[in-house]
Length: 198
Image (cartoon, rainbow, N blue to C red; front, top):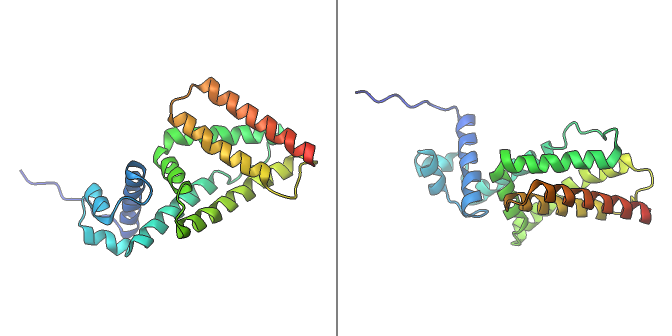
C-alpha cells in the first residue's frame, strides 16, 4: 500500500506551523525552554529545517514574543467605549480575557511565563509590551470618564495585574461566580479610586 504524499507547505505556512508548535511547547515546558529540536520533533521535520526560519535561539524567542504581543494587542482592535462607559467596556475586556483561556490557553500560559522572566533582555521586551497594553487601557479609562486622573497610569496597571490574576483563577478552576465577583470588585474599586484622585 503506497504512503500518501505529505503536503508541502509554503514557507509562510511552515513558519506559522513551527511558531505554533513553539508556543505549545513553551506553554508545556516553561517560557523559552523548548529548543529547535523539540519543535522539529513536534512538527515532524528535521532540526536543521527549523533553523531556516529561526536561525538562532534569540530569533525563536523574538518570534514567539512578537506573536504573543500581536495576539494581546489585537484584543483592543476596534474597541470603542460602550454605552455603559468604562465599567461596561472593562467588563467586556475581562470577559475576553477569560474567553482566551479557553480558546488560546497556550498563548495565555506563555504570556504569564514571559511576565515572570527577569533576565535583562526578556524583561525589557516585556516592559515594552506592558507599556503598549497600559496605553490601551488608559485610553479606555480616559475616553469614558471625564474626571479620571490622567497624570499616571496606575489605574491601568492595576487593571492589567487584575486581568492576569483573573486568568490564573480561571486556569486554576475557580467558579464563574468568583470570577465575576473579582471582576466587578476590581473595576468598581479602580474607577472609584481614579475619580477620587482626579
